[in-house]
Length: 370
Image 1 (cartoon, rainbow, N blue to C red):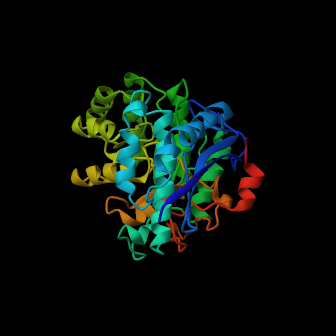
Image 2: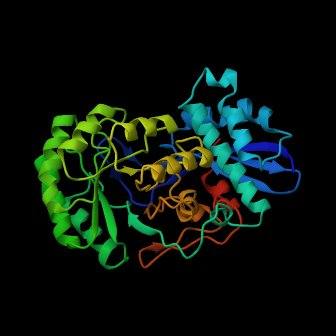
Image 3: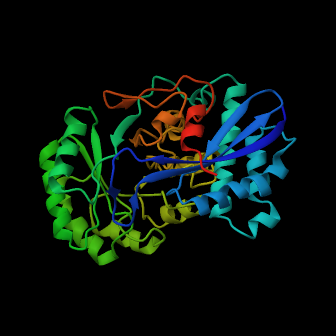
C-alpha cells in the first residue's frame, strides 16, 4: 500500500452550549484543521487537530501539511507509522522552524490519519489494533458544563442535571475569577448540588499566580476536589511543584504541553499527578502513546484532554492501561460516521474500523471553510 495524495480541510463547528467562557477564552466555534490521506488501495485516513477556529492560523496548519509534509509522504507505506513520524518530526529543515507549534499540530493531524489507515487496513477498530478490549470500562466525566461566565444558578442546575439525569459520575467546572471568594462560593454550591459521591474537578486554565492558587487550593480542599487542573501558567514547572507540595488536592495538566520532554520535566519535578496528554497537541497518536507509557512507568494515571472533542482519545483510552477516565465534550459529535456514545456514565467502544475519525461528507460540506 502506498500514499497517493493528501487533501486538507478546515471545519469550524459551533459549540453546543452558546456563550461559553473559561478564565482566559470565550468560544463560539471549534476549529478542525485536518487531512485526508488517500492510498492506492482505496483506503482513506482522516486526521485533524483542534483550534479556537481562527481561520488564518488554521490555514497555516493545513499549508504546512500540504506544502511541507505531503512531498515527504507520497509514495510511502502509510502503515509504517513510527518510521514516518520520525521522518517528519526530525526532518532537518522543518525542525528549524518549529518543534512544538504549527508544524507539530500539522504532524498530529497527519499521524492520526496514518493510524486511521493502519487500523482500517487491519480491519479493526484502533483500540483493538492497540491491544485493547471491550471488557475495559472507561468512565466519562462531563466538561460541557460549569462554564465560568454562567450564573451560579445556571451552573448549579447544569451540574446537577449531568449527575442526576445524564448519569455522569463526575463533572468539571471552571474557576479563575479575580476574587477567589466568588469561585469558592460556586464550588460549594456545586458540591452541595451533586452530593458527596460525585467527582468534582476544577480547572483554572492557567489563570492564577502561585500565591493565589495556593490560597484557593487550601480553601477548596474541604469540598473534596478530585483534581485542580492548570492552576497556574502552563510552563511553570517549579511553581506547579511548589503548589503540589502545599495542598492535598492532586494537580492535573497536559493540554498545553506539546512534547514528550515537557511531560518528563513535570514528572521529574513531582509537579503533576494526573497527566492529560492530547494527541492533537502532541504530534499525534505516536507521541501520545509515548507519554502514556511514561506515565505508566511512574504509576500515574492518564486522563486525556480531548482537544479532538473525544473521538481520537476514546480508542486510546480503551487500549492503554494507564487510562480509566475520559472527559466528554460533544461539540464535534455529529461530524463523524460513528458518534461517541456514553451509557450509564461509561463510554461505549466504537465498532467501525479505524481510529474513530472518519468524517461524514455532510459535515465537510456544512462546516468546511476555505
